[in-house]
Image (cartoon, rainbow, N blue to C red):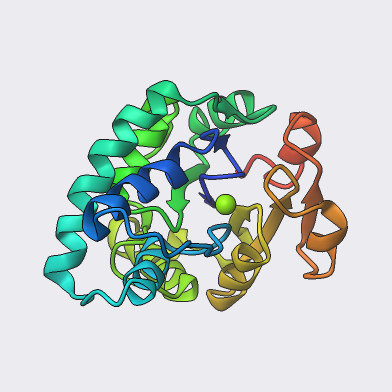
Length: 230
Ligand SMILES: [Mg+2]
C-alpha cells in the first residue's frame, strides 16, 4: 500500500486567516484585551506549540485543563470565522484527493499541527473531510513537537492496518513547510513539499524533499509518485 499523510493549512487549503483570527479571539477572551502585541509564527507548527507560546507571552498557566478550555473557545470561533473568511481549496487538491481516495492501494491520512477538532472543522467547511479517516493520522493536540505528531501518525497506521501493509518506501508525508519535511524524515517517510503555503519552492528546495511542486495542478505528474500496485 502507498500511504499518503497530508498536512492541511497551506497544503490542502488556505482558510484566509480564519485559523489565526480564531486563535486571536480565543486569546482575547483570556487576556481581557491586553495590549501586549502578539507576534508568533504559525506555519508548520502544532497548535499545541502555538498555544503554549501564547500562554507564555501573557504569563498564563499552561496545563491540560487550560488547554481544553482554550480549545473549546477556539473551536467555536473557528467555526464562525471559517464562514466569514475568503479561504479556498488549493489548486488541484480536489482532483488529487478524489483520485487517491478511490484507489484500493492507497491509504489517505492526516499529519497536521491542527487540533483534531480544528482539522475536522476546516476540512468539513471545504468539503474535504470525506476523503480522510480521522482515526488515521497525527494531530496537534498531544504534542508540541511536529516530529512527535508524525510518530503518533505512524503508530495509528500500524494499529489500524496490518503492519505488513506499511512499507517505508511507500510512506509519504505531504506538506508546505520545512517542518513537514523534517517530521517526514523523523519517521523515515518520503516527502512531497508544495509551495502553496508561505514558503517558496526555492526555500523548500533547501530542505531536499523527495518531490517539490509549485502546486498540485499537475495531478498526473504527481500520481507517478504512486504507481498502481499489483
Ligand atoms: Mg501547513
